[in-house]
Amino acid sequence: MSPLVLLLILAGGLAHATWNLVVKRSAVSGPTFVWLTAVFAGVVLVPVGIVAAVIDPPSWSDLALAAGVSAILHVGYFLALQAGYRAGDVSVVYPLARGTGPLLSVVFAVVLFAERPGPIGFAGAAAVVVGVVVIGFAGGRANWRTARPGVLWGLLVGVLIAAYTLWDAHAVTALAISPILLNAGTSTLEAVLLTPVAVRRRDQVRATLRNHWKDVLVVAVLSPLSYILILFAMQLAPVSIVAPAREISVVFVALAGWLLFREPHPAARLSGAAVVVLGVALLAAAR
Image 1 (cartoon, rainbow, N blue to C red):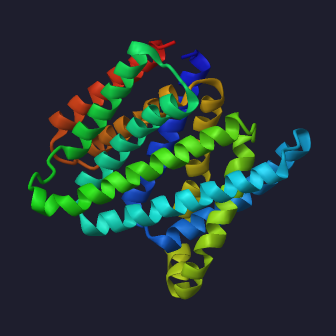
Image 2 (image 1 turned 90 degrees about the vertical axis):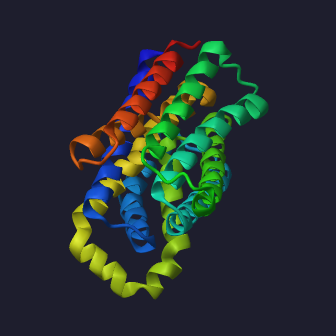
Image 3 (image 1 turned 90 degrees about the horizontal axis):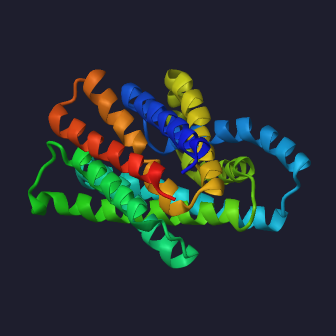
């Protein structure tokens, strides 16, 4: 992994962790918040995307297809994640989703894209997945009967993460679509897809905008920025390397949870974080 790719991944992971911490601190979520962030992200990204399109005109049919499929997968991911959090523990759904997603991304990148990360790359990817699961399950419930709904939803969310990761990687590599243009189109279409929900919940939209407009702006900027940086990394390095390495964001969130929010079980979380860092180091050394 080149220093530039590593820098893109670390910057993307830090941006991803930051907006997640903003959401956690403000305790705001739900479809109206996602709709608002998608709208604001579109407002920010579309003008930049227009400039990018003038400089390097894309295939508009390819862009429409790529952004349309990506938007559907991202909205499906959001809806499945929300359902998972309602049905099971966050400490079960989150680690399974974040662990299964990169694991499947690596497997299908090898199968579909014929990538060969090598023994060090595979070892690094495995370490990242294990570390993420250790962080997420620290202090979580172990009873299968109560955990089963969360497990099933977590696995589905992981499948959707792998799906949009592989599809977006295909869009920015094989279709040569600019990550900025892809995100501008995806954010705009996500807003369109969620508009019926926003219309039915107009009062919630107004309340969220009135009480959390700063949080909306932060997430609208940092969420697409974090993913754009990762997509640029995918243009320079294999998906089987970048997909697991981007989970370095989980380490930042785990450390902040311990230092800022005084979350319990710091030993287990820090142990998992150390394993993730080891995995990223192995991925950085992979060729």
